[in-house]
Image 1: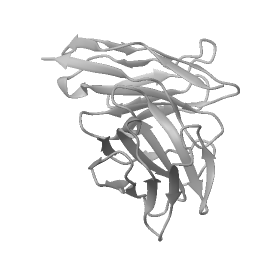
Image 2: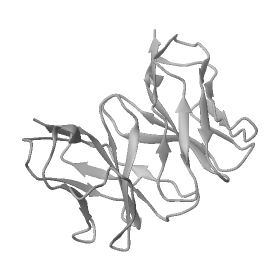
Image 3: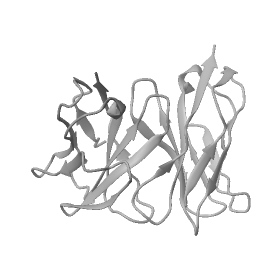
Length: 115
Length: 111
């Protein structure tokens, strides 16, 4: 069964540094998402992306964050200047279609630790 | 706005016990409802879903029925196993693309 993959599985960085989290969505999917989960807390939506544009974003997704589909397979989340509170598990997801009942498939996550 | 509330954990049960994890939601219109499971060290996996009132989602012995009158989607399993130990997330999607997740309920099943 096709899967969403994410790299790296764990990223450690210093406060103020830029990080790029990478995701490879399922190949025939057109809609892409990032979520985060701060340790012990609930999963929070960050952003959705379709047709090379952000289609929806939450208030968490401020100017420090950006997303990109640099080629036909990768989907990246960049944090420009990391803060301690960015430490979390970041999940990528993809779906074949957008609105309605379409299932989002989640990757295994990247654990980001900001020191 | 949309929100999901789940019973607080952790829930600790003995193997073969009956499981209920309560979930209620607030939403306008007719959301689709989901249960996701997160096993230790892994990502989120879809467990089951229901897309309209009175639908029952089921998978791996787990069941949940979409109850519009009580805005609930409680997860049940008749006989839990040690391998069911995980965090369970109730979620909704309401016409948009993204999910709204509940806080998660940690289940520990003891042998």
